[in-house]
Image (cartoon, rainbow, N blue to C red; front, side, top):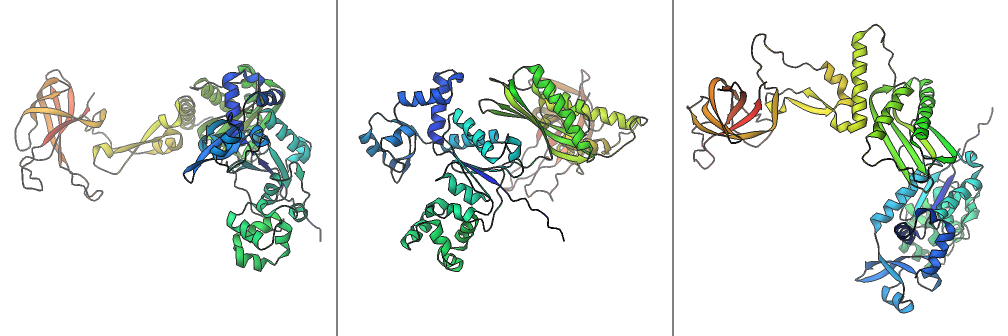
Length: 541
């Protein structure tokens, strides 16, 4: 019997303890200084020149500190301290209101940037991230080099960061709060967290206080007690958290984005910034991606191009296709259309040092005879046109109409995105027009019927002699109808009037489709007669 090696998961935890104040400092720096001065040296100089910064929020009818920078921490300010006490200690402190939405957006931006190391990135709110680096650390020179590169880049961007690597997310997360840079070998999680205080586990404050009252001050003290004792007093959820921190069990992280089916990327020692270099890079990645999908007989349905700037900004551009794409030229053309139509142009800043192309959704490719079958070739050309239009103006703006089994005119068809329903639209069967007869429905139907004024109409079911629409009076010289349409009472409980439709032509030869909403001498619920109303629903060619 041969033993099979099992790859154990490796989790890198990031913690940004000064995220709110770092975000504020970056915003102030961008507004007051050129972006190129945003480095570690200038940031440290800026910190010395400025007053301590604190972020406050209202808690228990008072303003308390929820975040602070290093300068504020050095003079004795602390999180949870009332603002009044902070002003007494340092009257020159700069005070900012807490903005959880902006903090969350900043954390999401950092998570986007971390995609350059692994596509499995999970949020660990309020100020943390979890990266599953299993099997990818060797691409960056090992776990230590990866962590060093990641932390150095974030510090250059102006963020204070702590990181740790372990076999479980709970262990790595606990270490980031107390042992920056710690890398725990597989199977040594229990020893790594044994000396940490119990609050490092991140459990509820009530559980932490209960553990300390019981004399259990470190994780090792808690681990020495029986699991049934811990579960009986502090819940099974805390016991599961403890076992994860000790490496005895594990829970997978929840990545913020689904893992793409195929990924290709290119890194640059010297960042690229010109349109030509970006286009050539995308074209090369498209060919590589097609070759990888072709081996498994698949084509791309949704593609995403990620552009990673040197200053940490990330831009994602996506395109969708109606049919699986199997040609690199098609991908290149779609992204050219998308980039040319961007309302917010792609800003390279100081350049992109990584460009990634991902096939987020793929389908199996069905082989068809395309050389001799003109119908298939025509369908391909229509699908390609739809894809290009969708890439330029958006997939929701390119629609096809599908027929519905109803006699209500405005419900006879409904618009759907053409990329997903093009094949169904081509197979759809519409009511055939009677040979030699005028069309029953107008070429142009209004989204909402427009009211008209009828000055004279014979009762009970005759068309109007004259009507006024958009301040113009028309005299009816020919008319066909009525076509009576009752509302579908089985679809709605609301009582709707019966419609009588007429096809009419005025003295100028214009043809209209109008209807009377309601019947003459029709009584309302209170017994009073309700006069019918007239509407124009469409125009014939």
